[in-house]
Length: 202
Image (cartoon, rainbow, N blue to C red):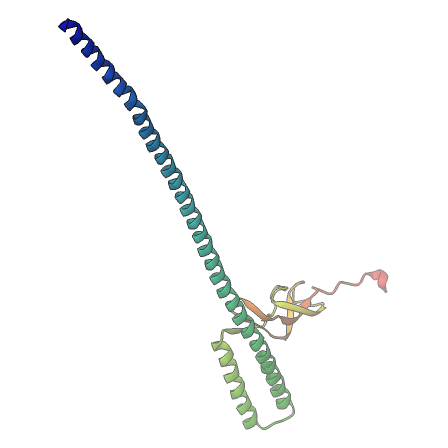
């Protein structure tokens, strides 16, 4: 009788433990699911922040590139404006320089005194020295190949001693500032030797 009761109690204990284990399994599964969900949320949030960081970095790089381009454009525009202003002013100055030269030549031909002519020559030399300091150089082609960038052909003529397409003489000097043209030289271009008349022309 005692043994039967003991067996019954043991079986009851085993069932009680099994029921306890079975009751604990859903709780364990729930905790795992919650942890998994939290991990997924964290990963999603992390991916979102990484994307946001990449977007901000891209915006920063674009803004820096735009700023750098604007700075370069400003410097280029400033240099172009300075160059245009200098060329415009020098263009007016060389016109005055040319007029002064022509006036002096005419005055000398009109018979002004040597002292007066020497005084004007000194002024003209100072004028030219100032242009040299500014980097202005004269273009005075003579028997050079005609260059349409630096020369302006005002007329042509036959010339036995100057090859065709070469400058016979300069009518008006040209000027340039460094490699930039201020004014082309006005020149007369050779057409070569005068063609011989055929006997039929007589």
